[in-house]
Image (cartoon, rainbow, N blue to C red; front, side, top):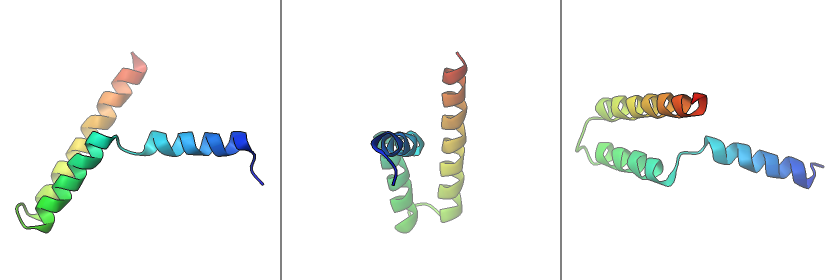
Length: 65
């Protein structure tokens, strides 16, 4: 059975991988726009992937600074 330390570590790891509230709202809005055909799904996918890559790059630069 994992102990309290292991569970806390696992929870912290998962939280570190989840998008922020603002990012989750952005991706949710993007998904809704594609679902209601306001934009085509390939466009939504490209926007989402592009945004994820930019966020990863920014996060990496902040970590290195």
